[in-house]
Amino acid sequence: MAIKVDQEKCVGCGICIKACPEPNVIRRGENKKVSINTMFCKMCLLCASVCGKKAIEED
Image (cartoon, rainbow, N blue to C red):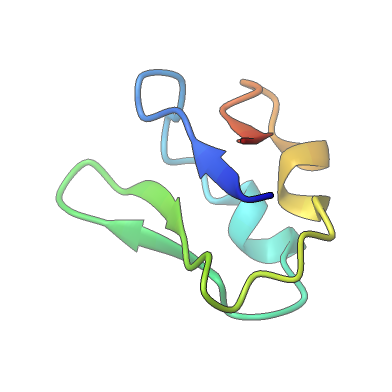
């Protein structure tokens, strides 16, 4: 099991960054879209639960 970010849906708002209890949601590039550090992600899915665009989901 893993978690992924749909880069087409992500708008780079950063709400998921604040929701993550660990520093595992990271902004990337000029567009500020996020990615998940899956190596350390504990799969709590808090980031997915706050994403208004439904850009984060379990893979």
